[in-house]
Length: 284
Image (tube, rainbow, N blue to C red; front, top):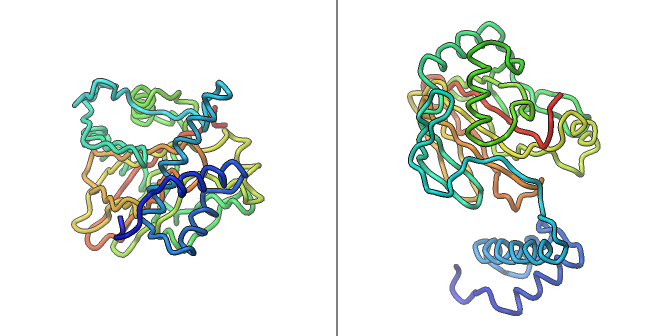
């Protein structure tokens, strides 16, 4: 926290008043920065007061705010979770963003199988285009990739069921498994995985299964250097170790979830990942 700046009662009251008036978190963040508040103090105050405002609203209405999200049962602080033939490790957790790093999620044999099958169908990666509802090339994403259909083969089906059991979310709520190859210099600049409600193409995208509510990135092959999954808002980097996965959720399509993330450039070797996106309801 910056010297001379503190989260005072007056600042808390101002944030609550603005939120109740319908102003977005983004607009409040911008106003605070323009008024001279440091980014650290602004983020801490907004996080604190947004949480309290959400809680008060839920208590008053009797309903929870935000979308339900998947996630493993961590209530007993487990070190391991037996799931779908794997003894999955809990390596790291965070609250904001809501994030878990899993170890031993994918076996080396499964990694090799997915890479071998994916090589037959690789093409330049596309991203979902919220302006149109379709897909397009994106200069921020310089990988090659492909999608497996849900349950396309025994390995994909087994992995999808393991994920569903691990995070308590139905298989049919998941998009098809995407496999990506990042060669030296390839990267994916920081972005959000949810679909921006303000974009004109988003309503047509949401017809297939609602919003995305979670992302799981699994590392199938380690590069020699580089290629971490980065979370710039919180200064976190997850190393791309084979068999490990980073899982994070977002209960609303808003930057307050702090799920801005990217794939750092691969400096040597090749990185292969498999990504699973989870939706609010059945993905068709």
